[in-house]
Length: 170
Ligand code: ATP
Ligand code: MG
Image (cartoon, rainbow, N blue to C red; front, side, top):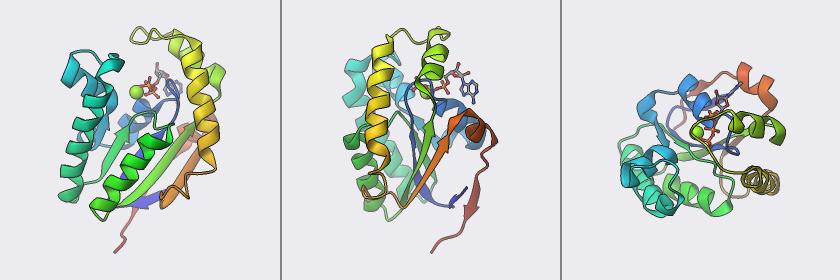
């Protein structure tokens, strides 16, 4: 896939779909703003969901500073809910930067199997099922929500073989 040299990338995928892994593989650590890292920054605990509002406020603030400086920014959060994506589209527009969605669409069973094997996650399957339902509902709306490019990677194979190139856009 080719994405603009300067854009705001929203990764979209349920917990365990491999967003953080994908981000590490394709982007610089400093380009990636993850909701977990911001929960840890504001609440000392990356799993503290009660810290989400503050964590996202801080994440959006930093993303805005990066975009204002013309730096590619990747938001590593589930982004399966419309309001989460709307905030990112608005932020990109505010800074005259193109919002791009990269969707990691991985079967729920696979995500759940991975989650059970993770020491850093302890929620139940219903959490992933709900996110999966939100994702399914979201897929057809992404373009209309304002994302200028929507790249959907279907399954582990497409995710593992994906390559990212850059195009200059004026
Ligand atoms: P969360 O939303 O909970 O942060 P995530 O989408 O960021 O989840 P990762 O942390 O990247 O997911 O990956 C979850 C687990 O799945 C990890 O144990 C990781 O090693 C494994 N995993 C990620 N991507 C792949 C892949 N392409 N193939 C096999 N395993 C993978
Ligand atoms: Mg992650």
